[in-house]
Amino acid sequence: MVPRRGLRGSWSAEEYAAAQRVQGTDAQVVMDLGSDQFLVVTDTTE
Image (cartoon, rainbow, N blue to C red):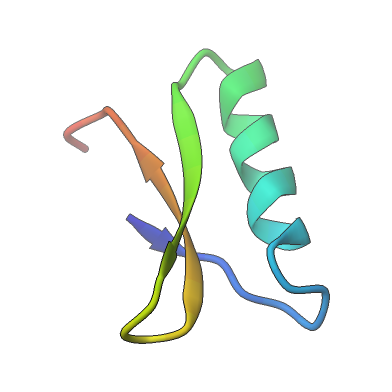
């Protein structure tokens, strides 16, 4: 998981996830309620 938070809420996370999908990585944005952050979750094991 990669924390991606900015002044625009989830938009920076959505942009990062979209860029990952363009590169062939399945990426989803989820919100971690405990830390109040949007996270980009991928199915890779790197």
